[in-house]
Image (cartoon, rainbow, N blue to C red; front, side, top):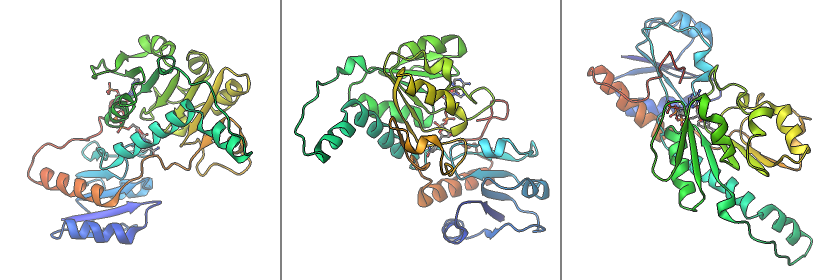
Length: 306
Ligand SMILES: NC(=O)c1ccc[n+]([C@@H]2O[C@H](COP(=O)([O-])OP(=O)(O)OC[C@H]3O[C@@H](n4cnc5c(N)ncnc54)[C@H](OP(=O)(O)O)[C@@H]3O)[C@@H](O)[C@H]2O)c1
């Protein structure tokens, strides 16, 4: 069996070593143009030329949960596209979102500023009931985040494409229930995949429907957000702030207004990192199952795009 590694942004050597250890029977190489036909590939944002040259691949294993970089490419219908299914990402995402939520809710930035000035000050505590958290996307990551937020007893709402029942979450589904979901949320967490339907979904119209003093946590993809709309809503006072991990252009360009905006906290696309050991173990198990003709989880539905 021949497996190619084609992972822009990932250092190849440690991945090759881990994949070879997990799949000792396979021949595993970095793909180069003109390489012979392979059986599987482990990829992150590969060039179109790779897919054009390797139309016989049985499956592409994406080194992330979001497959938007791949769905934009042309790929034969016979090549399955497989996303990482948690693989250690969901607990990181839960940490990140809970941290951002509590930092805002408990006003820890304001306390830090006071302490830096040598000021011993108190603020009136907010009421948890006044901070309903709305999670857009109730998939692998969204449901894990919901479980973590629940531990701190915030009211929880969730929005997905198909109707769902999630313990402790008031669930909404589809575009017809989006406005109701937003009006029932103050802190909005975006954990949607990036598709034609969700591109630009965080905009002036949707964000303005959050409860007064709304707060945005975008940990999905930069293209979900209309960046100038967020700035306008923050500057007008309609929104209280935002924590952003993802951006339309990454790295965020020098001089971008987000860098210095007083109401924005940002991180460099690090909310939930791809963990090598967990990812390789998952990919090796899935390849073994596919070779035995067994079903696997995490195959992207080409009609939905996630
Ligand atoms: N910042 C980071 O470090 C980082 C790391 C990993 C992933 N991510 C992002 O997180 C995203 C979510 O990952 P995941 O593993 O949780 O994905 P997932 O399991 O595929 O879940 C996606 C959820 O979004 C819902 N959804 C999709 N399209 C929708 C639409 N048009 N309207 C309403 N709901 C819609 C789905 O609804 P149904 O349940 O009805 O299908 C599902 O609940 C990834 O796509 C990626 O972009 C970011």
